[in-house]
Amino acid sequence: MFILLKLAILFAFFIPSEQKFDKLSIEVLSLPEVCQTKTKKGDMITVHYKGMLTDGAVFDASYNRNSPFDFKVGVGQVIQGWDRGLIGMCHGEKRKLNIPSELGYGHRGAGSSIPPDSDLIFEVELLKINGQKLTDDANQDL
Image (cartoon, rainbow, N blue to C red):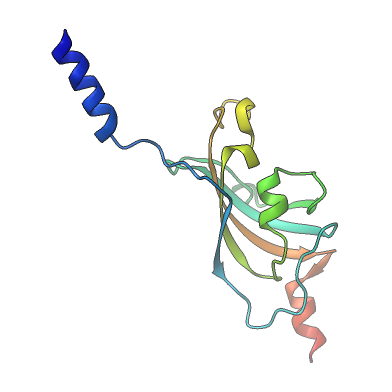
């Protein structure tokens, strides 16, 4: 019995655990050539996104529905990780957000697809700021 306990403790240290994020991290995946406008608190923005758990399981994707998501950034309409991670974003920019559970859905989780205390990964593409599309920005210089 003592040997089994030792083995259990040994395996607990060497079996890789699920990745945990200690803070919000932002990775820029792509930037437009020109950035005339950046998102700021209170802007109405339109995004496409893919949301994943840290094991890679996709729990939601606006791309699959062909239905971008609109919301005011920085005012509490979405999870804190989005409110913080999407400020300063350019039209057409794509970002990857690694969001710790406390800036996501926390202890409550979300339905059956996001367990409690889950860290989240989002890939987000900014389509519009205050109703203005990327092509509108590009056409202003013509």
